[in-house]
Length: 310
Ligand SMILES: Nc1ncnc2c1ncn2[C@@H]1O[C@H](COP(=O)(O)OP(=O)(O)O)[C@@H](O)[C@H]1O
Ligand SMILES: CC(=O)N[C@@H](CCC(=O)OP(=O)(O)O)C(=O)O
Image (cartoon, rainbow, N blue to C red; front, side, top):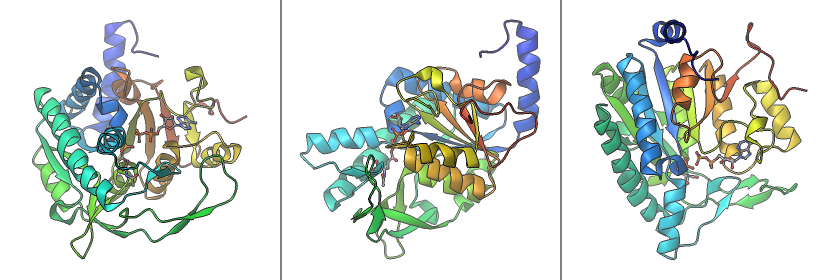
């Protein structure tokens, strides 16, 4: 539901959220498929600019999975993903550095600057922000399978520590940090770490108020083919039920793991929101109805029970 047609009622409704969130930290994760189209990227940056202008402390974490797929294909580098996570050979990592810390990163920074946001670009390596170790081979149940198989993800980093000092300094100075999904090892190694996982860890470390995932779908759907099957609210328990029913696959799997990590780490709510609809982020923050899926640790008094709980 958009803002009320009465502009003053809409302003009053929005103002209560502006007061509530002033000075709070929001982590906004933007997927690569949302960033590919310049018009959509612009609309997203304009929404981030509005949050920033209301003194909300915004940290942006971006992906670039779709762009990396395209570059790998152009360079004849095989693309392999298991359960939504990329297997990263040394060749894929070289391409990931170019795409995540280069093309996608620069284009997003340029658009944020154009929207009046003082954005500062970082990777997980800057000032030891995200430290990781190489993921050992792990048992994974691929999409559609029932049995797990051992997978060596290669140069994928599992996060050990977050040092949020550099972010705190930037936020204190009024800047908007923009983080690319690469992490650093103790031994000087560079790893590919899923952007959803980084966003959740940063949100936890910063004590963020909200964590947003900007998607190419309207939110969490009961039926992937029907936008009208959007689940507006869910608790962690309900999420486990959806997982058990098998409605969650592909890139949604690491995303929901990230949501759990963040909520269990003290972030009060996570939001799955359309990155394609021009005002979806603003509607999610500043209206009572929201626009996507809001996930909270447990039942919140006053919130309608999720459409997906029956
Ligand atoms: N139940 C579900 N609801 C919504 N999306 C789902 C669901 N199950 C699987 N997906 C898929 O997950 C995708 C989101 O993950 P992904 O493409 O990896 O996002 P991103 O690139 O933003 O990290 C959606 O585009 C959709 O295809
Ligand atoms: C290990 C792993 O899966 N890394 C991800 C990092 C980029 C990412 O997360 O991009 P999106 O948010 O656009 O999917 C990848 O290589 O695709």
